[in-house]
Length: 404
Image (cartoon, rainbow, N blue to C red; front, side, top):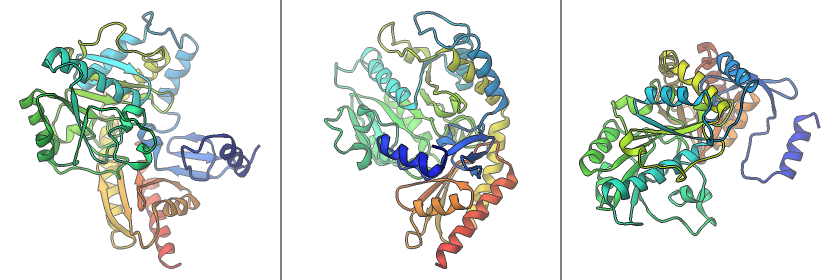
């Protein structure tokens, strides 16, 4: 098996079809560029859904991983290891929080936040046993575990996976009034994506996050911000909440925290929240392992300079300016913040997947979502010239589709 066609055929035949990948087989990658098994190069404008914020194979991250691989990769949490303290302290400093609870995947981090919020509700707020509820948003995407899909509004993620976990109230994203109406004496938290990525990079109106923060403070609720995709430099700040100067009670982090090398996730909160967790009540054999912490430490150090946040902001201005020039030329709307954009294609022209395939033919990799929308989230290390070139390829693709 050496050709893309052969590898795709076996993959489709021997693996469950839980994804619908574009027909490209990547062999190696450096920075913002990837190369397939035939040697064709593509500009990666998805960056592993923000997992590769620092590009493929960033030297600092790879060096940290290789050094740790030679020494120690796993102890389990039965013992301390010499990378753990630095990881917790560094991520705590980056988030401005007292404590960290590390896990592996983003979905695990969300599950952790849910468990902590419920336990906090019972032990600190005084909610009656098994009565806690958490307010969530329609159009959300927080992962695909059975608990998380229980409050999904995406039929593909939810249908035929019941019975569903109770304890969640779904309200309209972007509406503070909807949240206020859903709060009762048993509400313990509001879980929100500062920007909804999977829904099409939806940015709420200014003031929405500030209003949630004020409501949670007034009603004694935890504000939980899922910054798995939006955090760690993607939007031009360390966190998307920073655009409104909002500090949630709990940050949920993942994806880019692992530098595109290993799965690393965590929640960050102050002691009055995370202090409710005691030994044996939550954990993971691989959560906070030495390799993950070494990679995470490199990522935290890189973010501490502010260089990547500033670069995402600057390149984001280029990205959005150029994309807005395509409105009326096959594009209906452009949304996003920093180096992250959702682009609605005219549905009469093409679907998002058709545009994604047209871009793939032009050596640019993006991914569609919800019919006629494509998402662009190139690595923050992308050059300005390459970014402009990619948008030019989108313009070419739209022009060709219009004239077919």
